[in-house]
Amino acid sequence: MVRRELQGMLALAGPVVLAEVGWVSMAIVDTIVVGPLGPAAIGAVGVGSILFQAVAIFGMGLLLGLETLVSQAFGAGRLDQCHRWLVHGLALGLLVAPVLTALVLAGIELLPAWGLSGEVLRLAVPYLRVLVWSLPPLIAYAAFRRYLQALAIVKPITIALVTANAINGFGAWVLVYGHFGFPALGTTGSGIATLVARIYMALFLAGAVLYADRRHHVSLFRVSWRPAWGPLVRLARLGLPAATQVTLELAVFAAASALAGRLDSVSLASHQVALNLASLTFMVPLGVASAGAVRVGHAVGRGDAGGARAAGWTALALGVGFMTLAAAAFVMVPGVLFRAFTSNEAVITLGARLLLVAGLFQVFDGMQGVATGILRGLGDTHTPMLSNLVGHWLIGLPLGYTLTFTWNRGVVGLWLGLSAGLVSIALVLVATWHRRIRALHPVRPRWPGGESATVKR
Image 1 (cartoon, rainbow, N blue to C red):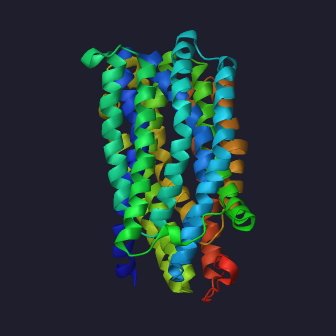
Image 2 (image 1 turned 90 degrees about the vertical axis):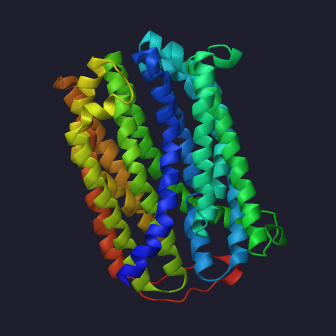
Image 3 (image 1 turned 45 degrees about the vertical axis):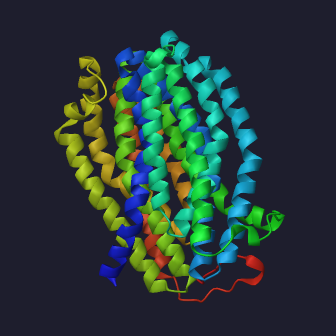
């Protein structure tokens, strides 16, 4: 069973990991393209991106429940219910997108209160004013993506992200520096390129959903497209804790960026590049987490408790194994990694110290990321939410603030505090998974009225 599960997990996780890497690569490409403009431009794009993502990730997180509901419906052989859950996912996204867009616009007006340097603030505001309009297509993309992943149709997601990154990278190069007769727009040009790339991503996956239906001789349009409040509420109840969890996790790094911005532009630039590198490595366990959620959900849908256990532990092993290698790279060649982003020696020297700290928490970061996914496959989104609230906001950030500003450890102290929070979250989530999977009993789920599968624990 282990070998079979490993093969199935890798087949699903590989394209999903590439998609996750493609997602975070947009911010990394933006940072690399504006890097020659100096530390202030790097900091502005970093602060702008993380503020946007702190709101956008909530909307995308609301749709994480689609992975659970669609995968369990698919495992039970109910493709009609898979279609209906996509309809409700799109409806939920349509409801929240205007509200979240308004929140980002309000956040732009509050940026001066962050205490950022004048040059960083001057560059960040126009960048964000363009980037905010990529939120509605990003939420639509998230709905299509979760639906396709839950059906184990992952290649289109990878293709969408790879090609969107090419569009973003080329567009940013043209618009930031004014090639081919275009005006040199600086950081704002990077935001425009990202907006275009995200619209393309949503349209590409919409086409992929329609193509998949046609290829499998089923039709999304055979089910009712009228949303019902009951399933909408069910999706929101499952997605809200997941959305809160991912928002809490990203928001703590947004807060850390704001604190780093109070130090100096070199500290902020070093922090941002190190955060980009740590985010890039985290995309692997995050992709494995999504694959694990789907594999666990499929097993729960067909009443296979043993399959759910095998899927979860296999996902954890893959995530931890990769992050061990990532930790070694951070510790052994930090300078080489930083030079891919900037030639500023002050930023590289400080950044190398940050990567040493990041190397210490890589394994735990991967552990908590995968555990969050496999618990989601069981339908548990509350435990990761509460763990993130306590670990990041009651342990990590307060400790980091104290080390940075009270004990004068600078931005390195900030990262040490965040590391402590990640370790605590990882230990709690793995212990929760161990307890719940041991208590899982094989029950063939029933689907009265389109409700999702349940299992006895």
